[in-house]
Length: 333
Ligand SMILES: NC(=O)c1ccc[n+]([C@@H]2O[C@H](COP(=O)([O-])OP(=O)(O)OC[C@H]3O[C@@H](n4cnc5c(N)ncnc54)[C@H](OP(=O)(O)O)[C@@H]3O)[C@@H](O)[C@H]2O)c1
Image (tube, rainbow, N blue to C red; front, top):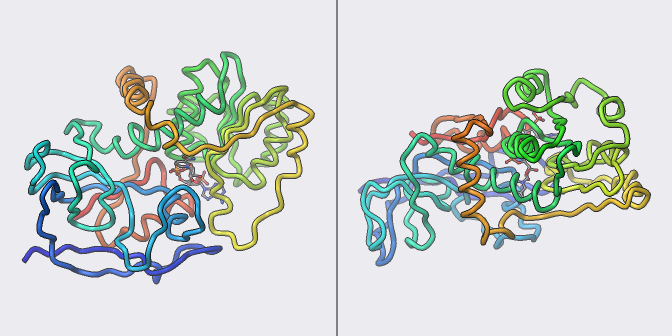
């Protein structure tokens, strides 16, 4: 019997950070492959801050999770058995493979992907991360040449893409990130015009110095104080794209709304939230453009690849401590 190691959801981390006890490791037999299904040997898992939110079950845009279910996650693997006409042994596939060694899924829930040097990027720059940056910026930020674009969480997987798409759209770009190393990377490799280190600098004062009352687009991954500081410096008709609010994901008491929101009235600004899956019908075109930009060297990206099945829960926690430098991935042993 081949064994299938799995990490199950064992807690509801509402209003707090993740703890060891939120997950439980079990070993089960690899399932028999049902008609129309495919058995995949999981190889690379992708990590997103939203995974913690899915465990909390506080409603929203995904089906509720159950205690005892295998932790949800996207992943890439190789087909090892197929009872679906469109998949053959050896194909590389991507889908909701979850935190386990083997996934048995209907073929309709898997995508075949090319086994090339951008294989892992299907979970990052060419996957939900890149698409989140693309649609959030282009549909909600609506950047124009000459605009000033400010991005929070700028050195993260999504934020680093946003700055580069903003550059392609002709913007002046300012990224906000934690620590000198990430800020240096933003300027030297990612091509941001300026970087603000929110852990060591006064964000509001730096925004005043760099873009006093002239932020045309603010792409927010963080929320809280950083959102409030940015609202203080918006230009007329500014667009605020609310992608995420990671500063609140571990908090019990939610902060009061941003006190500077009244600037939206004075400056006739708009603040809109979005979920990237709203644009699913446009994914193929967006992926084609992203792949082209990567090939042309207009977009670069970084991957932070951790190792090993036992390390999976700790790898998710890295996102909330800012330990990830690039798209957080893990290669299974
Ligand atoms: N709306 C959508 O459809 C959608 C889809 C995907 C993701 N998202 C959102 O996009 C955002 C980025 O996700 P990602 O997958 O690209 O992750 P990521 O940015 O690669 O990783 C998370 C980063 O957040 C920063 N961070 C953590 N705690 C923070 C805090 N208290 N204050 C400020 N920054 C903090 C850390 O960077 P530093 O080291 O710079 O602190 C960390 O590296 C998240 O808010 C996520 O929920 C939204």
